[in-house]
Image (tube, rainbow, N blue to C red; front, side, top):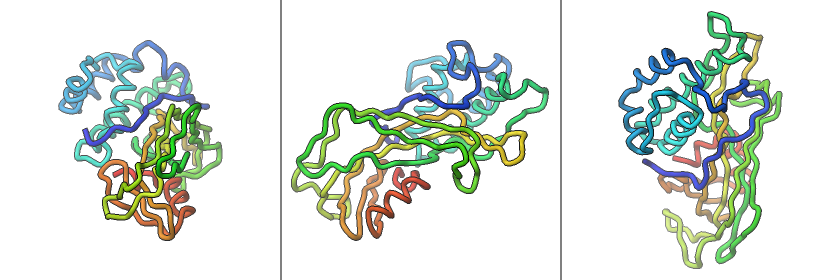
Length: 253
């Protein structure tokens, strides 16, 4: 796998479909089997990696598939895993009570599973450590826009960390610049579904993931991407924060 975030967390979502994170299978056996069968190679890879059988598509299976997709961001495997997660999400949402239970799908996919919004939590200087309750929050409020889509439900993910260590003295970024900080960020992942109402877009399957990046905080600012450690240059720290918020994938891989 390409990389693992320092935390993956299923989180609370205001407006999620009822029972979506329950213990029972999230889809009927026929629908789940049909979708999983289309992505047989990807399902087999995930089953071998996690040592689990995904055939029932339970809430636990949902967590495993999501974690696998996030870990593969920036690789050839991500697109297929993202589509698998997206199709299962849309089908489960449309079978829920919230969708209305009609014969035709009430929700269609506006944006497949991927990073939606990012936030910068802590900038820890060289030789400094933070410890304790370091929970960060990434949220989307009702009415916020994500790539011009006006979101109609509120979503928030909490991403806790017990300790955040700055870089050791003498640490350098991949481009040779001296590291002044380690920056800890959080990303909200999910699927955006388009509802039957006019311009109704909802975030489904929200997940939070945290990342750590070596950085030289200066003007310009240099920060390593979490996945491949390529260095991204920003004019200043505010530009980094703004870009991370609207396009978190830019700093992942």
